[in-house]
Amino acid sequence: MKTHLIALDWGTSSLSAYRLGAAGETLEERSLPLGIMQLDGSEADFESALEQACGDWQAADRDIPMIACGMIGSAQGWREATYVEAPLGAEKLGSALLPIKRPRGMPLWLVPGVIQRGTLPNVMRGEETQVFGLLDGDADHAAPLLIGLPGSHSKWVTMEGGRLRHFQTFMTGEVYQALLGHTILGRTAVANDAFNAAAFERGLCVARLHEGQGGPLATIFSSRTLVLTGELSGTAQADYLSGLLIGHELAAMTSTLQVLPSQPIVLIGNSTLCARYLWALEYCGFESLRFAPEATAAGLWKIAEGAGLVAAEAAGEPHVRHHAGH
Image 1 (cartoon, rainbow, N blue to C red):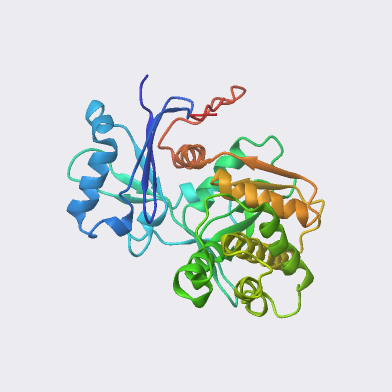
Image 2 (tube, rainbow, N blue to C red):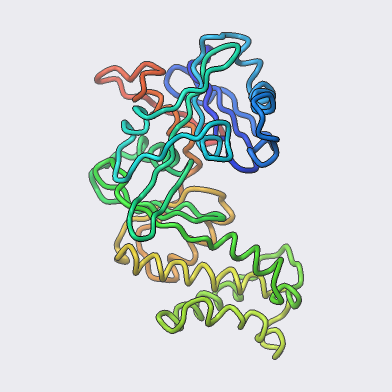
């Protein structure tokens, strides 16, 4: 089938490429360990990575437009795409694309990141594309929706009327890895592939009981002391710490964003990690929860439509998007 757009999710550690058809459907996708931190930062290395990811797709038709989101547009990426300010709609991203002119073929258009200004500024790169991709398949754009994107730097995004209104970042995943890998907490932890649900829920419970009483800095040491006193096994320590940190994140998110238990919440991301967050959200009393598959390709198509890189859908003929594997 004919390619209408090459869409790239180019992050810190990996590069995902999507070959999209006339209605934005994924015809083919690839993932390579060629994130910006695996490259030397030169024009030649970025071009080489792009060639490895989709060179054959470009060779078939040099006029295929290309668009990329993620850290490729950061100060450490190929070019720095200036942040656009929240609140915003997808059309604002489309109007602010940054082109990278290349020796051969079409330019690579970079999606800008989003900045939320204030006393403590907040930024994102890549997540904005995911949330607009999810929204494109959601029937009710007007109703307020909270979208969670768990990860190294978890994002919680408030959407309303089809617009990104507000977001908050929590470095839960990176802190978890740092605590186990680079502090004394890791000395008592024993590697274990099996998920310990009881330990995870115990961590959630401790976070909830100590809400407003010092936060995570007052409780994380318990992941060591409970092992030292024999109340927790070393194999359960990592899941206890995971529950503890996620519990504190959800308590802070609820307070910061003033979220009620009835608020509809959608999670996007790794299914295993999202399963933990769904468990934690339900434990914390949230009532309307669902998991959505990764939506980057749909978001890149939507932004490309707004920028005129691909034909917009005809009136009265809505697109039906098909995502590979779903």
